[in-house]
Image 1 (cartoon, rainbow, N blue to C red):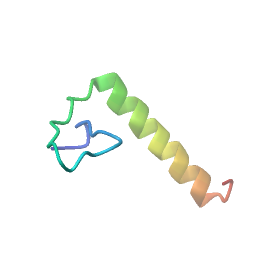
Image 2 (tube, rainbow, N blue to C red):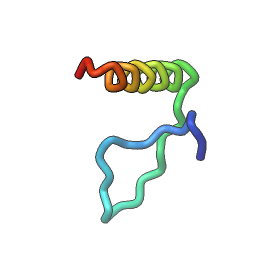
Image 3 (cartoon, rainbow, N blue to C red):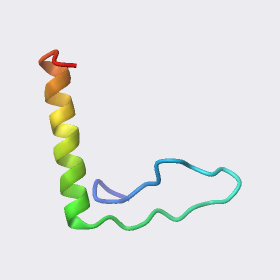
Length: 46
């Protein structure tokens, strides 16, 4: 696994799921969102 790997939002413990491979665009969107969330938290905007 790595930073570009996809994970489901809801995990079903009875049936093991195989994470869907993340696309480059999805990884960049998630990284951008996390970076924005981090900066908003650091600056106390939330």
